[in-house]
Length: 155
Image (tube, rainbow, N blue to C red):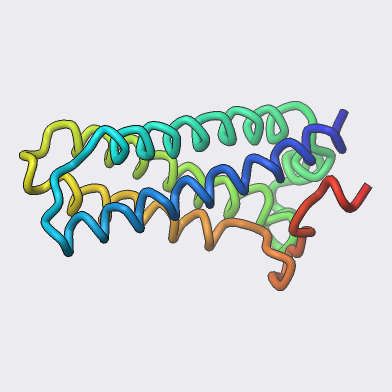
């Protein structure tokens, strides 16, 4: 169960990263060209939000019920805080991703409420910051808590 959920969580990472990048690139392009906010822009933001929500739900299930790493950390949080790997999974990863999720939702709300001329700017700021938190909180292959690019290939 853990390996399957971890593989799904890993694949969803790419949905988050790719939809987030697409939305940020479109927002930057729209801002620089003064292009109006389009249905495609809105659909991209919606898909970014959807992928973040789904990723968060899978991650939350792992954190609360499935992950042996989280269970170890929660059993003795004092010791987990002294162990860089356990602290990353118990606190840092979760915090970064929750901040990213919050920024995506704030961004969606701000874009909806913004005047037409401010939609791209709001999207660029909020979704761009969300992507920064995703990048910082993701266990990339070169990071201290390295994970493979595609978990499915690691079986």
